[in-house]
Image (cartoon, rainbow, N blue to C red; front, side):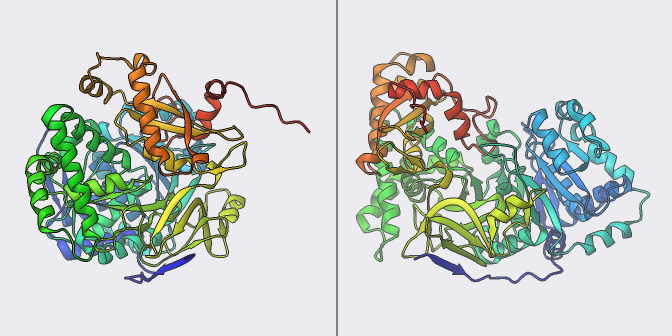
Length: 606
């Protein structure tokens, strides 16, 4: 199978925009709660009705217009995920302007590039520290007229500025926005080079959000549906859910500090979440570590086996048998109920994207506490372009094509996409746009296959394919994803291009290391000590052996080097969306790779 299509559930009129999505929700929900917000990290969740949110949006939009923001002007937002981000986002759209998100961890150089390339006129930042970052490069941003700080009263300032302005001005602006108008420019964090500005229209968001609300009602329309956003709203994935939640009938909350996530989940009690696989890996590994020895460890291992058996039985015509049902009830009481409580107690669905989840985690969570709907998408596809749906789940896949989407596999295995959610182009880069948008198809750069169910499986990146000295093509993602499942492992970069065999650079998870050492009879070890300890190295060899089960002998990892640091966003080796900057790692650790192979690559001769 090389082509699948999924019909749209909703045809979006040309007059539709993100503004009309909010207006429709207000018409449906009125004085019902749309958002719950907190004024302090430990304070109560305060309801904001649909009508009140719209009123606040229009008040801030009037302030933007009063400060000179014109239709089509770019306004930047640099902040953590918080209520004010969503408020300002919708206010920018109501004013007919274009929102430009900036990761709150961005450096001055990154901020300079984004604000200059997007020709930003106004920036709304969260803190004085963010304002200082902008100030460092302000002299190189002639179009930037002002910087407003949320923690210094940016929202009240905008409300006050708009009081004297006629409400009709914003109403006209809001109603004038159409399907094809630009909504946002999202700069891909990128693993190499400068970020690219992806231009997404109101129609891109409207198509996906409105189709998701109708096509996946179990998630977005269920009675009492609510979600807590904790991923950065600078990322397209969170931004899509922000809009889709309003297109449905769910309540939205924001969690700005992931360190408080467990407590926030417990108090907010979401019914669905979006997350990246690393979050689920952490949840699983933490639960496993808490039951690290003796009877508790045996109970957890037995329960994990029951969860997988239960999940696999769900895919059979007869479903789980009586004996399995009894085991599942016992495991639920002993283990699963505690996991559910950790995530708030009401969580039914989770949407995972950004990297492969893996069958092990998929089966464990579906069989224990929450069904993870694994999906696939890119900034250029406004987030989801395929996703497993309730009743159409193939664990290990990223699901069938999203509503209104065509997915095709090219002769070289590249995944091609077509549909109303595909971006209109890269800002100021017509040549690059023409390179990836060809004959109506978007060339993703990802490799994949379509199974007999029409579900997509992502197998790697074209640019990351390793070709060994023996001519074997190896997709590193399969090996890396399986190795990262081990609690000791934080990150993996598989190497071996033009080398005699496949190797791997591994970093240790400093948070999991103490518990693992205690459970395995070792004294407390630092990362530096653990990376050379024979017991740790033997355990990593076992993890590599498990990963190798998924590939041929020629593709298997033969040798590991454990680094003395982890990859983080702060040290430049991770993007804000937790993707490893492979090219930077390979360049910076070239000497380490040479040591792994015992020699440097020979210099090519003419």
